[in-house]
Length: 169
Image (cartoon, rainbow, N blue to C red):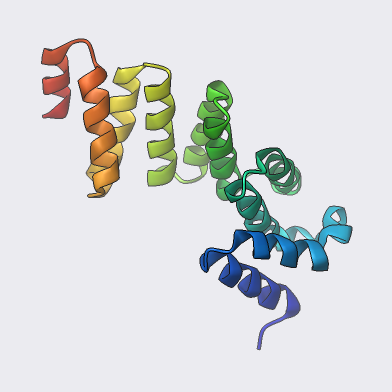
């Protein structure tokens, strides 16, 4: 037996997972947008999925507003911080991205997604030592070829070849 909140979350998740975030957004807006500000904090998972859907269809500012409202009701929420980091990285707001990824790591210290995000931010800022640090941390925790490619890219951009080799070892 599912209560209505669980059912709605599963319905939205299915739409999102099937590659139709725009349908997930439509489902949310038809059923919940009018009462968005009166949501029970236990429904934050539904709001989070709405924000992720908004982000994936190119509506980052709306997603940021929803994520901020989640944090207003629950100050320590890993997924909200992580998604805010992703949005800020996407919008080239690198200082904010660093802040949100570090807050996400404060909630979940071994988050591969947050570490990878930090690696990407530092790479965009041409801060290759920091980028290498975070990307190597991810490589230690997983064997993802995307992450290894990002690590190689940072190594290739590092001016000091000997240092790059030493870091890579």
